[in-house]
Length: 398
Image (tube, rainbow, N blue to C red; front, side):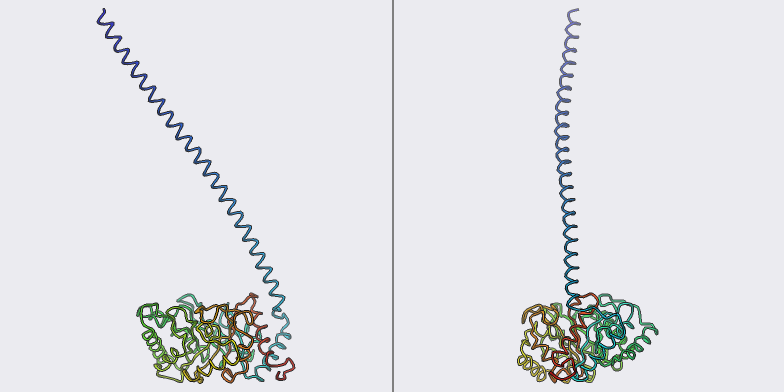
């Protein structure tokens, strides 16, 4: 009996110890669970706080965005008071157009703007007329896409009819090349892609019976010398001359950005020297780019000195067009930042020189200033303002 009792007692003790261990284990587990639950609660609370914080941030951002939009609209309303809208009456538009046309005949200066071709190339002459332009530039296709639909026969016919209807001479039309084109690129495959777009643009000019085509020579991308980049551009121009019949290729001077080709007059001349058909090559001088590239054109005399240099280096007979822009950036900055006339670093003497110098007669002079009005009426204002710097409203020279 004693041995059985001892055995039972031992078993009972072991069971109790096992229960005790299990209880301790459960207690530890519960503590861990409680601790984890507490941690999870803290994390949830932090998450909720973060979500609320983010929500408030978004709300604040939205409010700020609304305020900014309001400020922009106020700014546009203020601008609209400076730049009157395009008249609704066609009689008023024609009166404005004839006034500016008369100024162009007095001065032999043909001012216009880079205007919208939204809805089709045939709309661009109408948009030019609306701002009383005597010249205009346009994109022949989406300037930021490689592929664009071809012109329809109706597009072409309507374009020509609208030019005639609004007394717009095709010799003062200056189409602008795609921003994607880089004929200086040393990468042959990429250069060929650019060339295909370049050729397509020039053929579109021929379809519209337009004789000028302006483009940016491009960039070496830092992968070849300037001389090689110049050679690449010239070779592409020679190729396009062989594949088309009469369009004059117009090189636009660059602002001097890193690796760009054509910021110096000497670079433009080197390209021209390598072009075989000299009758189909020319230059468009952008006043903002010229200034940014280091040529001081702020005074009448300084601008005249720069143009005399252009004549001696390049030959002024190659000057086929002008992009007329003020500059947000400083002399020699290398930055292409256009500004509205009279609002930037250039001076009224700069623009008076363009309006009176022998170098700028009978070529398209195109405004590419910011369209701060959203309806292009700023161009109408700037065109009239520039003409009336040198011609009195009565039509007499000032």
